[in-house]
Length: 300
Image: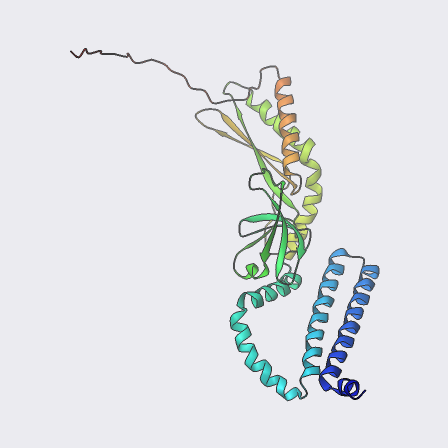
């Protein structure tokens, strides 16, 4: 019985019990706040940031709770933090920079979950923003036209301080894209232009009105000039053929699908002209074949 009393009265045991109780209370509180946020916060991005911030505050509160329990005098904590801080700052430079990057990402508007970004040559959709790393579902590489390739990439958040961050979908979720079409000389060049203009209006014209409104908001937010949103066709006459360029605006997620529809419609319209418009192709013409002399020598 004496051993049990000594064990119960041991200050270290008391501190351990207090630590366990405090951690359980903090864990329960964090889960309660996160569930409340999931229930009452409608905006998905705000809900995501709230849950991340509450979890981080829970970790910080737990750290201070443990330190406060096991250090009797708070004055000693200042000395302890001062000594440990210098070593931690030197040894964990990348970790600290990644944590600062996480704060900058959440509140600086670099990107948010669901955005398509390019970080250091790696392009993909943001599927999670952690305290230290951002997780992307990668696009491209051996797969063409911004399609997922199946790889999940994790990039340190400190990257936002070192390299440019390309965001495809933040303030202006549209991209300008182009189609190049070579037309043979002798074709009806006016008809070729009319075909491209008509197909452009029919296929991507629907994006123009929505994109115009979004661009006007961008002009009011930043110092940027107005741009041509409607599909446009330009012509360059080179030595091989007449080269038309159809420039249009499209949703950043629909680039490949839209280009497929455009090419299909253009080919249909060109075939319907019955030869008035012909698509050009590279060809090599041999005007003269030089004579070939063959000498055979006999060795005895």
